[in-house]
Length: 583
Image 1: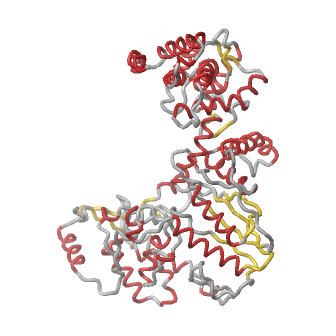
Image 2: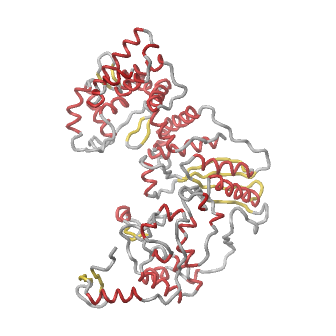
C-alpha cells in the first residue's frame, strides 16, 4: 500500500495569515520524507516480536496490519520521537512516556462518540482491551502529548507514603503474613473477556519488563492449548490458588469484596467454587452500575451481543464455621421465572419509592441476568446453566418485550407522548382506537399502515403481535378490545405462561419429554384463540399424529391447520400439498 503523503497541512506560530494552510505535497517534500524514512533511528526502541502466540494478535487481526514487532505499532516519525524522549528523560519520569505510548501509536483514532457525549478529547487511544488498529488511524504529535503529560504533574505533591505496590502473583502472596489484612477489594480477570498481558504489551515493551503469561488467569478462546493457550480448567486452578491466598492473609471475621462480570455461567461457577473451596461465606451481593458503557455493552443492552454492562460485587466473609454447600436447582426454569416475575411485579413500586435507585433500565436482558445471579447467590443455589442467552430465551417464552425492555404479559404499557415513534407510542395509538370501540384486525390495518408509513423499520413488531401481547380478542366476535382487570390478570397467569413457553420450545425442537398428541392439540387451539399465531398452529400440526386424537378433535385440528395455512405468506401456502403428503 502506498502511504506517501498527498497533502501537507501546517500551522504558523507567528503572525501569519492564514495561520493554517494546506497544499499538495511537493517533490522536494516527498524527497525529504523518503530521506527521513531511509535513516536509522539513533536511539533504542522496543523490537520485541509480536505474533500468533498472543490471543490479542489473533483477535485484533494484527497480521492484516503487518504487525510483527512492537515497533510496528508506530509510524516512523512517532517511533523516532518517542525513542528520543525515552533516551533523554529522567528514569523516574518515564511513566509520563508510557502514559502516551498507546495514544502515540497507530491504534489512536477519532473518538466520534466524544462529540455526541461531550466527554474526552477528539482523539482516543483506540478500542480498549484490544490491540486493534483501525482502518483510519490518527498520527498524534508526540511533542504535544509529552508536554501535556508533564504539564499535569505537580512535583510538590510527590511524597513517600505507607502504600505498598507489589507485582507478584495473587496466587502466591508470600510477602504477606497470614491473618494480617483488614479488608480485600479485588477485580479479578473476567475469564476470556480481557487479556491484560497482551493489552499491556506496549508499556511493558518500553520498560522491558513483561508479564509472565504462564501465571495470567485467563481462558483462551483463539489460542489453542498446544500453542500455549489456557483452558477453563487452567483458569480455575489459578483462581482457586488466588482465593486460597486471599483467605490465608485476611484476618478472621473480616471481609473481601469481589467485583465480577461475565455472561458465561461456567466462568461464574469457577469464581463461586473458588471462593467456597477457600473457606469464604458468600454473605450478599450488590449490583455495581458504572454508568459508562463500552460499545459492546451498549449492544448487549439492546440484545445484539452477549455482553453484560453491569458488574456484581460479591461480599465474602471469613468465618470459622462449616460452609454451606451450593445446592443444585431442581427446576431451573420455574425458579428463574419466579425470580423474574417477582422483580418485575415489584419494580414499579420501587421506582415510585426510590426513583434515583430504580428505573426502567432494570428491565433489560442484561439487568435481569444480574438480578437472577444475585438472587441465586443469596439463596445459595447453583447458577449452572444461567447465561445471558438463556435469560433472553426464557424471557421470550414468558414475557413481552417492548422497546428493548421486558414486561409481564399482564402489564399495561403506556406512552408519555402520543407521537407515533416507537413501540410504547404504537401501543398507545392502538389503545386510543380500541377505547372508542372494539375493532377487527381488518378494521385496524388501514389506519395502522397510514400511521406507520414514515417509521420504516423502527417498529420491531407487527400489528398482530402488539394486539396479542397487550389487548384482548373476543373469540365469539373476533374483535379486539381493551382487557378487563380479570382478563389482564389471565394474560399473565401461570397456565398461560407455561403453555406459551411449551409452544415455543416445541417449535424449536427443545421440549423434553415430547408431549402427548392431545396436549399438542390443546396448544394448537390456544395458539389460535389467544395468540392469533397461525404459523404456530401450522408448525404444531406438522408435529402431531392426528390418528392418536379422538375423531372430533382430529377433524377440528385439520380444519384449524388448513385455515391457518391460508393465512401464511404465499411460499408457505404453495407448499401445502407437499406438507399434506408428508403427513
